[in-house]
Image (cartoon, rainbow, N blue to C red):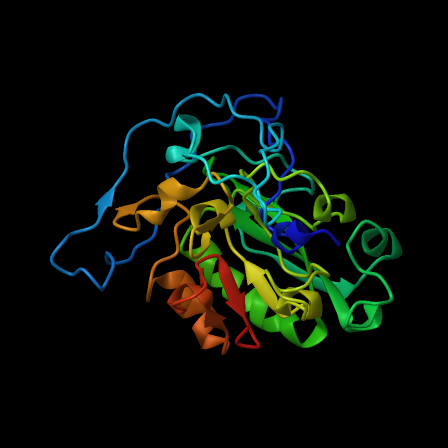
Length: 286
């Protein structure tokens, strides 16, 4: 793999376009995070971005970035269209009925495994993975069905945690299985796919990531970027380093998302010092 492949999972995306269904009644608003501001600065209250989101003019994954010497994309300012990110979700699976949370765990179908990043060299056997479909709320205020691959023993913790996120109406833009081509695609720095199993090394390391074992989940990566020194991933997400400007999809300390995973014994990478991996939840501590 090239140097940048460690950043591919959860960072690259495909185009998310609004569907062509007939207009539906306006859904109830999606809650941002019901969480306090940055506890390190309690004297400065968190603010919330309000107002009508701008029209969708951004096509995710369409604009490759120039490369840095380390193989990642150049860290560029967040485009105005993504500063208050609220792109709609394109349904890949049938949405849940009556907007109720539903989760299903099965053995991984052969066609699903074939379009995933699994290969025999991965540190988890395909028979030990499970295919999970589950409900989530989109930034469009509608319920959708996403898909994840996780290790067998992670299926219940993951479905329970996302059940709590659904109850809190926490918005997720996209939830799909990472495709092999994404690992070597040119970085675009604008992806926001919530994902679990990806057979790749840890960022900047030769050892396997917890994702390669099916024991980690990245939630709304663009809204919760990874940082280490001058590196920001996704590369266009610098606007979301301002954690006092609380926008939908952001994960903050001791908020419902962190508590939901903590109840399952999973750690949050946003509490780490270097790197700080705000999107990352892990059963292994790595």
